[in-house]
Image (cartoon, rainbow, N blue to C red; front, side, top):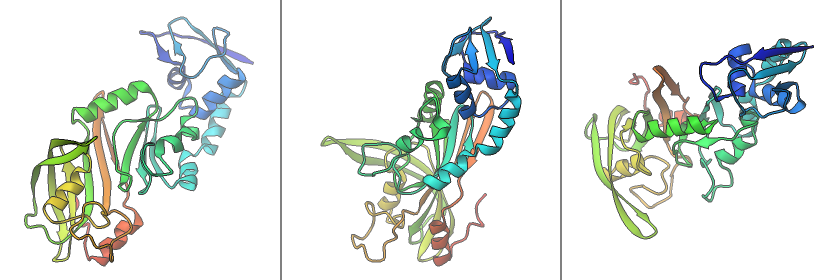
Length: 305
């Protein structure tokens, strides 16, 4: 049995997979790709890809009697989170048609070019989540930093999110456990940070708003909201005031490795942004090693807002 639809749009060049979701329902991307490959979905009697741009008056044929039943069945079976947890331990916080939001595991770089054997771009390029498309990186997160990270599913969304980050319209909150007791409970760090590019010295202005959530004479739990996005910004700024982050092997007050934590105690806790007047807020649960050190250092999260 075949069911046909005539595209009725007020504007052209809409992706086929998006049009299908708007017309029929929240169909998993994997099912759309399967039907397209097998020829069960055709546009103007031709096999096309999910990224094909449909226009007004295009005819879309769907060759499947139980199309909606298949959607329901596939919804139950399709669980991207369990796939990622099992293979890579990067938890999927949200998975929509334009981007996914992850709770990135420490020790995995975002993309190639580092000494790390694993990187998120390669891992997710092979995932069912990106079947028929590819992951686009829209911001940075250090290899050893855990927490909220976004990958776009198409070039348009990647460009939009990249612009939001560049214009500082994405608001990020980090948590860190650092050595010692900060003198001031809240304030701003405004610094000129130095980095080198091919031997050339580069000075960059960096600004971070911070607040101490809990502390004692031994350690502090600090909430940080970077206004700028410099490389290693938070790690450098805490090191500069003499309160290195536990587990930071590069920016630390003592060069001794005795008793140093294996993991970097820096976590990307929250990201907030707005697209087309819709607010998005994502939080990433703290990793167990972070919570364990809080207990050891007798620090509490009760001061979190």
